[in-house]
Length: 320
Image (cartoon, rainbow, N blue to C red):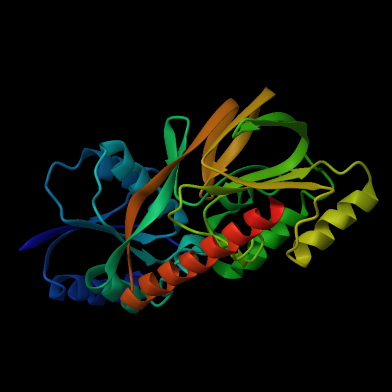
């Protein structure tokens, strides 16, 4: 019988997993697996378990929020393996799950974990660490890990908005030198993110719909520090209508980006604190993650990829 390691965070989100745990395990076993279950006990426990297990598992299934997924993917990446990962989202935002059309219904997601198909996704290497879908610094980036779990549970996305609104009158500014693909950008930024997702912080469309999850490229968005209230209003307006304002925002795709700053800047990786750094190199590990999705979802994503690649070719042709 095939072997599965099932890692779950019993305290994730609003606790939706707990009352359905027996049903989830039943689905996993009926999927033909000998299941070893492991409830996480503390922060980074999922990472520790994934890095140190000695059994040979055919698949790892995790349930929790984006942070739990991040820890499991990081552990698998550090092991250098290519074990498929099933994801049962039970957190507050579940950005990556939304991007891959993984159901927020616990039992449906469990079924996909065992009866779906593996889909290759890019993974980010952040110095010696890893991330699944976002590495970011600046305004609002500490909202996710800085907001109390109890507040997230009760208010959901509103908790992020309320916590974030406290920062709007205390805008950070970081002078950063950014190198990518032979180009150099040096400016003052209030926010920057390197992403592989169509949803960030539970809000869709901020980056755009033209995201290919397995092309070896990240979407990079750098928002300049506004010089005055008018500039700030213009930036907020562009984010509301989900349209990049080139006067205030740098936007590009790259598989390798290097950030240098005089001061150490706090970063967040998949909504968790990623440390403070004055030098960061982000590499795209193309198709470094195999995640279970529905068969028709994989077909849709591959069809969408072909459409976007054709669109990019046409745009490059026009530029030439």
